[in-house]
Amino acid sequence: MKKFKTILFSLVLMIFVTSNVFAGRSPLIEYNGKIIKSDVAPYIQNERTMVPIRFISETLGYKVTWDNDKREVGISGKDTEISLKIDSTKAKVNGKELKLDAPASIKKDRTFVPLRFVAENLKAEVKWDNKNFKVIINDNKEKASSIIDLSSDEDKYVKEISSLQGELNKSIKDLKLSFFDNAAKLSDADLANAYEKADGEIRSTVDKIKALDVPEKFKSSHQYTLSASEKALEILPGLKNSIINKDEKVAKAFIMELNDFQVKMQEATDSFKAALKGEDYKAQKDIEVYKDLKEKQNSTSNLLQDKTFKNIINNL
Picture 1 (cartoon, rainbow, N blue to C red):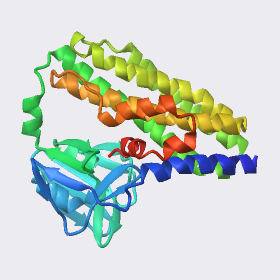
Picture 2: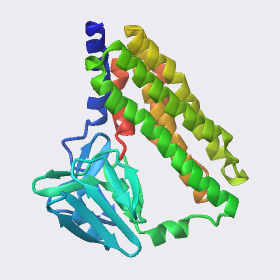
Picture 3: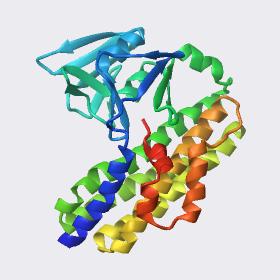
């Protein structure tokens, strides 16, 4: 069992290394069409772009405060207040507690935070440009002008599907970053309990997605979310068989299924954003190349080393 866990851990580590292939390179940040620079460079951690909190907050027009006793940083202005504690994955936005994919941390005497979380909660739009290794941020007024008018039913759906897509994506990422990270240290009973927890969370989210009343305007984009949901359900047995039943062959296949889920989730997100703007969805070139390569390659290691694939999974 110990040997198998070590092998599995090594397989999963390949994904972590791949997804952080650009970790040594600082992403560019573009705000309203102009490249902006901080005195301390942003960096990529666990597929998230981390930026100095004062730099990004003041750029967006907000004030930053620091409570040294509580080791807590605050952002305030307009109608929004955000508080984050150093090394904590919890944050509060207007009094509501939310979970972070990556905790606030101190590096080079600066407090770094996940850019997407902060910018979007400060009502900005955030996009990732794979080709130029760049984060694109636009003010809310630019975002609002590009979104089509929504009826009350459509607005309700947009809020629900946005939340559920986030829950599904987060459940899979938690499974990779937390569950697998400890796989070599856990007992069989702990592994079984971790699996049941992940299984329950994912199935509950997928059931909610399937039960949504989808407006005509979003029926096409919703199919991509359903496809990602089905893929999430498909990979769950592979998780159980590879780890709990100690099947190395299934473990390798499972890693590839996780990769497929990430691509499908990206398609779901992109098609939904296109529908919001009343545009036809067109897949990113990297995704098209990935699908083509997947048909030609059967080797897990070869595909993981492919440069195009590395770009796809290196999301914010």
